[in-house]
Amino acid sequence: LAQDALKRRCYDFLNMTSRSFAAVIQELDEELRDAVCLFYLVLRGLDTIEDDMSLDLDRKVELLRSFDQVIYQKGWTFTENGPNEKDRELLVHFDVVIDEFLRLKPEYQKVIANITKLMGDGMADYASGEHRENTAIATIKDFDLYCHYVAGLVGYGLSDLFAASGLESKEIANDKALSDSMGLFLQKTNIIRDYREDLDDGRQFWPKEIWGKYVEKFSDLTKPEYKDKAQACLSDMVLNVLDDVPQVLTYLSKLTNQSVFNFCAIPQVMAISTLALVFNNLDIYHRNIKIRKGEAVKLITNSTDMDNVVSIFREYIFVISRKNEATDPNFMKISMAIGRIEQWI
Ligand SMILES: COc1cccc([C@H]2O[C@H](CC(=O)N[C@@H](CC(=O)O)C(=O)O)C(=O)N(CC(C)(C)C)c3ccc(Cl)cc32)c1OC
Picture 1 (cartoon, rainbow, N blue to C red):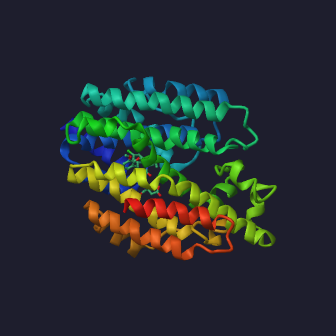
Picture 2 (cartoon, protein in one colour):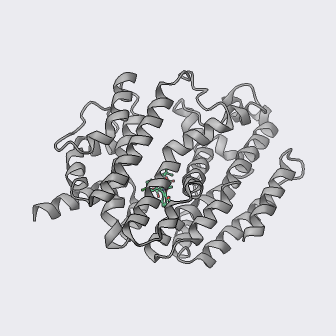
Picture 3 (tube, protein in one colour):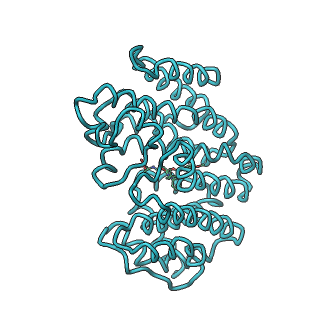
C-alpha cells in the first residue's frame, strides 16, 4: 500500500540518521511510535538547517522561524543546503516526512508544531544575535538558555506527547523543570564530550563565565602548560551538569509505561556513564572519547526498571567521587553535589 511505503521511508530516514537511538524509538508502543519518529525527523530537519554553514544568515533565520509552517506544506523539499550527505538526504526528501506528519492525530501535530516554533525562534535568536564572534555563550545563564532551546524543548515536546497518548499521566507534562533537565543533562554532557570536535569545527558551547576563570583563550585548554587549569575547568563543567541529576531521576521515577521508560532511561544512563568517563579525563581536549560498545550494551540491557537505573547512577557517581582530587579547586563543590545526589539515590 502506498501509505505503508511512505511510513517505511520515514523509518529508513530514522535509521539513517541515528542507528542506536532509532532502534529504541521503534520499540515504543504503537500509539506513540509514529509521533515520536516524526518528531525526531522534524527536529533533525531543523538541526540540519541550523548547522548548515553554506546558508546565508537571513535565509537561515527565515527558514528556522517558519519551519513550523513548512511541516504543513505538502510537497516542500529543500535543495539549497550543503554537501553533508546524511542530513541533506532527509531535507531533499522532506515531502515524505510532511506527508506522514499530516497523517498524525491533530493533537500530536499541534505538539510537534508548537515545539518546532519555539525551537526555530530560539535557534534564530542565537544564530542572528550580536554574538557572531562565537562568544555566543558568555554566562551560565546563556548556556542554560541555549541548551533549553536545542534540548530542553525536546523534553517538553516528548512529555506533551506522552501525556496526549494516555500512556503516561498528564502530570509528566506539568513540571517543565523536570522535562527541561532531561534535555539539559544529555546536551551538556555531549557539549563536554565534544569539546575537541566542536573546537576543530570553529564552534564553542562552553560558557565563558566558567572557562574564562582558567584561561584567556578557549583553545588554551588544549595546551600542556595549562594542564592544571584545564583539569579544573573540566571539573567545573562537570559540576554544572551534576545539578541536573536529581531532576532526571525524579522524571524517570514518574514514568509508568515500560516502552516509554526504556526510551527515556537509555539516553540518560549513557550520559551518566559518559560524564564519569570525561570527568578528570584530559583526553577530551585532544580527541572525541566515547564509552566502549560493550559498556553501552550492558547499560541498554539494564535500563528497564527504576531500581536498576538508580544503581547504574550510583555506580557512576561513585566513579566520579573516586576520581575527585583534593587538589582540585572544585573538590569540595563536587563532593557536595555528590552528597546531594546520594541523598536521592
Ligand atoms: C524526555 O526527553 C527525552 C526522552 C528520551 C530521549 C530524548 C533524547 O535522546 C536522544 C538520544 C540520542 O539521540 N543519542 C544519540 C547519541 C548521542 O547523541 O550521543 C544516539 O544514540 O544516536 C538525544 O540525544 N536527543 C537529542 C537532544 C539531547 C538534543 C534532545 C533527542 C532528540 C530527539 C528526541 Cl525525540 C529525543 C532525544 C529526550 O530528549 C531530551
